[in-house]
Length: 162
Image (tube, rainbow, N blue to C red; front, side, top):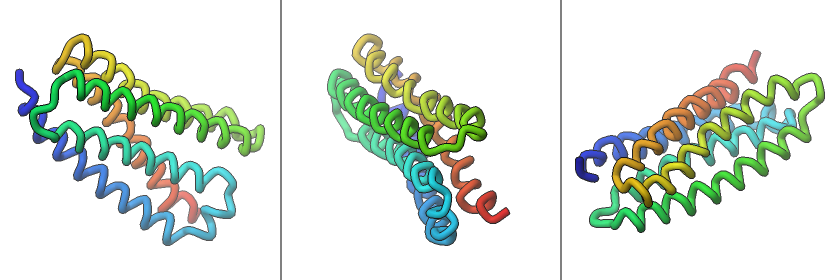
């Protein structure tokens, strides 16, 4: 198996991430007053954008030709660790802002965010060790990030208006 077999996958995920990012921006723009009136919603929107940006950056980096697996591993690991720190800090801030009656419900979202980021950390390490086979760890991170971002987009576009 060669790295170029991943090309179409990363092109598709980069394009999808860009399209979903636009959808979240539209949702935020349309409902900005309502979003700003709920303490945790602006942060939730930012987290969704961060997850999509992560997909876009990782997918774009994977499309750079003739990189070594060491370079790819470093890129993925550096971005993943930075994103993990950012997401975890945001999750803690959101948790602190949430009323105690909603904290249990919020934990699902926090766990979802962690599950979206941790596969990228594993991928960065696995790419060093297993080379191309380590790329398979990126797939669950992308899928979970897309699911979480679509759920958040739904909240920002539809649920906020109920």
